[in-house]
Amino acid sequence: EAGVTQFPSHSVIEKGQTVTLRCDPISGHDNLYWYRRVMGKEIKFLLHFVKESKQDESGMPNNRFLAERTGGTYSTLKVQPAELEDSGVYFCASSQDLGTQYFGPGTRLLVL
Amino acid sequence: GQQLNQSPQSMFIQEGEDVSMNCTSSSIFNTWLWYKQDPGEGPVLLIALYKAGELTSNGRLTAQFGITRKDSFLNISASIPSDVGIYFCAGQPPDSWGKLQFGAGTQVVVTP
Image 1 (tube, one colour):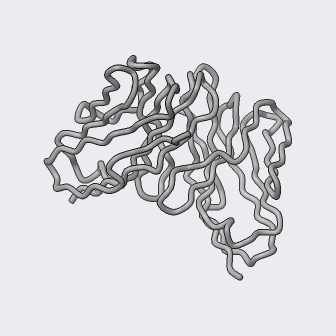
Image 2: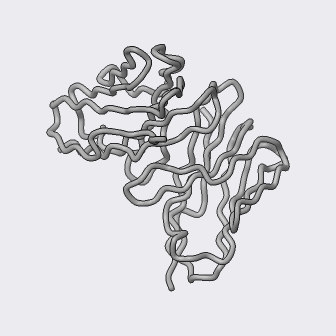
């Protein structure tokens, strides 16, 4: 069984540009989470989908971040326009019910 | 929000030594989790704790859910080179609907 996959693995963009990150959860997992780790700090929760609905988006930093999960399968996280402080590693995780969360390898975003 | 403090920030140890790290919170958690992240990968769950006072082992790893529900520790016995990585504690607050709160991580380096 395939694990959580994320694309791209790395992205380097200039301030003001747009970047879209993609997450494919484990097949059959209704719960999908986005987290972010800024250099040296803790991994912070961004939001939680249950199927296609946003269950909790309390961790989204501001309105430059837009997450979608149309059809309840894969999810995208768009940052527009990107700022320097958006740099970090963006992790996606999925779970069946509210059990163990399985993490993807992350997307390393660098905004210059 | 809850503060989750993880210490130490980093550890340099010799192969064969034991490792101990801990996390404390300003408020209670219903679940404590310990994850390990290898370079270029996402966090992988090592141990999950669900009840105050619970002591659980997974091979050379032992973790405990503090009796106050505000702390947890992880011990690694007889460290080996592949124990290198970043170890994160994570807690699930009451009524969090799956949202995890992470510590800042403990970087473990094992020298031969």
